[in-house]
Length: 313
Ligand code: CP
Ligand code: NVA
Image (cartoon, rainbow, N blue to C red):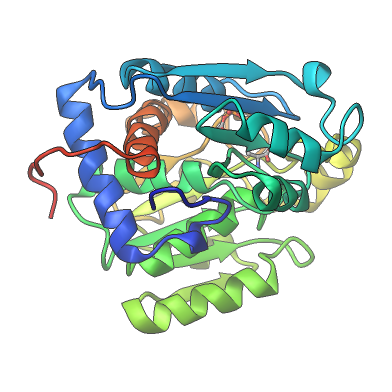
């Protein structure tokens, strides 16, 4: 991982993911760890963020480094200045770039012109940091990943894509229920199927939420309208009307199933009112784990991390 970009979960191997979870478990137990003193991270965001921005900033602080947040108005990525020039200039100042973009292609251009690693902080195609942190949460709650079944209900979006790739690399069965026209992209599915052949994971794409959720260990959902799709919100509410995660749907999963959501959530849409406050919901552990997993990621990517393994694996 050292010195490489993380634009997609497919930039990692199953072994890389095991290592990240192992380091994250250890760092979470040990707290602050000054392995990145003198290192500086730039955060460029074209869209709003609470969790991603704060968790990366605090992660760098806890590792002894610094983070500089650059808002859309400050940088004008691709408007005030070309993406390629921004990449080349930032590379002269900072040790890594964390970027949240509308188009995944913007990230690819950033990465191709940057001489420092670029980390995807969410694009229209993927949200790898979310998926990796989610695996940490699932591991903490279930004690394993291999052989579990995750049911994703809703849009075959960026979060679904990264989870699909991560689950299939790690031997977790992945079922997704989405309306026709909102399924995961074919290219991502083909790659995941390839990983699944190696890991033994099973993948199911269906339009029926109850089929996906039946006896699942993890029930996962995300917003119906992602950032950048606001103009379609009303139409999407209609398309996804039968895809709400409510107590009736959740009752089809295993009794000890956990409920996950990357947040922010739209209560009354993809989740019924109150369900994220239920005992099955682990959404705030998920949010916290963004920071721990990203500490492990920064440690691996920017070097200098040598910590003894604890109980993971
Ligand atoms: N889950 C997540 O990425 O949250 P933010 O959009 O607040 O960063
Ligand atoms: N799919 C959502 C995830 C937000 C964390 C979006 O892209 O807006």
